[in-house]
Length: 207
Image (cartoon, rainbow, N blue to C red):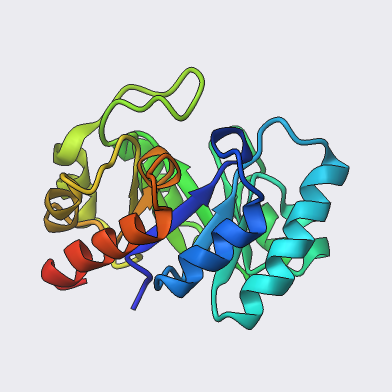
């Protein structure tokens, strides 16, 4: 089963070291995490990714690198996530290999259809709700698009954008296999406790 909570680790949103945070989330039951650091140099992205990949693999967590297929490969991560302006999915696949996951972001039904025809292991859809975690975000697509694309593929669908624990149940019921959460997780007083809340909501929704 695809992990129902996809934790996005963004160093710009936290004031504590990233590795202990990731380890605490793992202890809470999170099994899929991504490093998203738009401000990092290539060298810093590699160093952070290598550290996280090594630690999280030992904990049974799949670790994904955002945008950088080259960093994902060199760091020994579990995959890469690409956006519409990054490498195409199948080119990223040629870099990271068949065993790694390649995920892709989509923002409308045409992009989703195109992603479905690639080797992507999962397809992200969003922003579902308005989000403050991204500069110049795409328009919110709401739950309606999520319900529509659910009929188009059997691949796992990850919902992202403005998701909070209060609305996560609605997102799962609309067809998401997983919710990607950034701000509502990282800004919580106790991110691990918040993660357990999400996992409880997922279990109640049959995920």
